[in-house]
Every structure is written in C-alpha cells, then in structure tokens.
Amino acid sequence: MIQFKNKPGLVVYVTCGDPDLRASRQVVLAAIDAGADVIELGVPFSDPLADGPVIQRASERALAKGTTLRDVLHLAADVRNARPHAGLIIFSYLNPIYRYGMKEFAEDAKSSGIDGALVIDLTLEESAEYRALMSQHGLGTILLAAPTSTDARLKKIAQASTGFVYAVSRTGITGASQELSLDAASLVKRLKKYTRLPVAVGFGISTPAHFRQVGLFADAAVVGSAIVRLIEENPAHAAAAVSKWIKSLKPAGGMAAARG
Image (cartoon, rainbow, N blue to C red; front, side, top):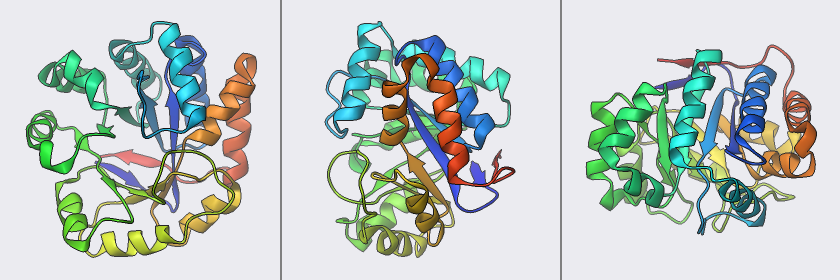
C-alpha cells in the first residue's frame, strides 16, 4: 500500500493527454520532483459527471487528442521506470475500465507499475468482482467516502478500501473553492474509527492555507482542479508552472511516499 511518511502527504491529479501525452509526462515527473507523493493519472472520459468545468474541459481536450486508458497505462509504465518510488494511481470512471475488460485492466495495471486505482462512479455494492481482481494482482482499491454517509456505510467503505481512503471534503462536483468545508475534519475523524489506512482529503483544496489546514486532521491532501487549471493556463510551460505551485505548498525536502 501507499504510505505517507510525513503529514500531510500530497496527492496530485492530472488529466492525462491534456494538452497532450508528452506534456502530461513532463507535468507528472515535475510534480513528483517538486514533492508530490502520489499521482492520480486521470483517464479522460466523455461524461465526467463528478467533475467540475475545469476537469471537464481537460477531458474534452484529451479526448480530442485520442487519449485512451491504454495510453494512460503506457504513460504509467514510463513514469514508473523514471521514478520508481513514486505512488501512482489510476483515476477513472467505470466505463473505460469496463470496455477495456476488468481482468485485462488489473493485469495491465500491475505490469505498468500502478499501485492501485480509484473508480469514481463504482459503488461499494457493485465493487466485489472489481475488488477481488485488484486484490489478486496486489493492487489497491481506493474508495470515496462522503460527508453524507452514515457511520455504518463509512465502516464498510473503510473495511473494503486498500491503499488509502479518499475523503470527499464536501458534496457536489470537483473544483477549487475559497474555503475548506467544515465537514472534512468531521468526516476524517469518523473514518479513523474504522481504519488504520491513510485518509486523504480532496475536492476544493486549492491554496497553501487549505493544504496546511488539511494537515491538522488528515494524512494527505488531494489537489486536482487547481493543478488542471494551471495546465490549462500554461500549456506551453505546464511542468514549470505545476512545479512552482507545488513547491509553494510545502518546504523543500518534505514528505515522501513509500511503496509497500
């Protein structure tokens, strides 16, 4: 599983193929070198219902370039070869994985050096076959936990998760926000009753202040829309822009994630 040696760890989401796969590789390597502990390699999808306009636009651009799940797995293998100790997660909707074939996905994810996956629209109740395949190949299953979930459901999510648990800081779609939801700390506290896995908080984290705030109660912070917006605004110099922004979050020599 992925372990965050220091607190808070940093999980960075990138929509692969935006503006193109070569640029995505540069951005991912730059993010790792700047201090990102885990990279969520986003698979572009035509109907990303859980995502806000920033990531929706990125998916549209990536799809227009023909980016597929297979391309993302190839990118993962390249990154794994270049940065052996980085945490790498596939972030996808269920449809691309279903079309690829669940068994084939698990096999190819393993051979690509992936640590696990987060399938954002896969419900706990429908995940048994998927989780079994992932477990057979030594891959983590990262599940989403929402503030609106009952304690009974949070317990089931925590027990079914491997790798880490993704705590959604607020209800709604992804996107940067001005204030971090007050629900986030309460949700992490509730989850910690049921698991020893790291808990990462995402949705709306977009400033150094948010990052520091999350570090007071969670193991890691997930930054997505803020990174994707930087790439959108600096397509020719995306890697440099992302590197600079990540370095502003935490001091040099910060936390590292170990692949265990």
